[in-house]
Length: 218
Image (cartoon, rainbow, N blue to C red; front, side, top):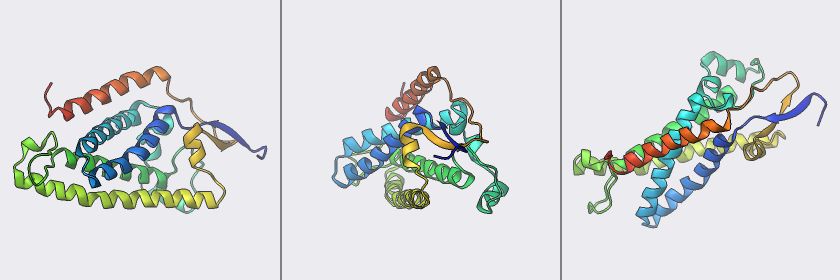
């Protein structure tokens, strides 16, 4: 490694844990649905709901690289990055930031639709399906199934970007495992969020998921 590059902490544990748990849970949710293991499918969905809730909160109070305010840039920022005129950033680049946001929104919509869905026999139903009639719930279930392909497309684009960076000899996977990434000497990373902040955010996210899973009943 050249003298103009150093390794520094970039991704905190909550971001990495959320990322890899979603990597496991999304295919598990698909597999459980395709094989009619609907209790497991629901449990996976509730877990994803908790992770998404955690990630949204952490995107506000977490480490600088986790915060939406840092990596979501306007059109000028994206254009400057594509033109190679943007200043070096720590964490997601402007284009990658919007890719992450799109996947989170699609996944949140997918989970939200599942909460209102019901099967053809009204045996398996999401905890919020009681708030809509049967026909609406069935239409939502159909949309829930179709939206998965949109989510799959976004994931495919994400994997394609990772492959392009790997071809350019820049590994994005290992930093997401270790939390440490190479940075230019002129780039100053900001301190990560303190570990104590994880617990209250995780407790709040778990509480939201539990409350929704029980049909909004205390």
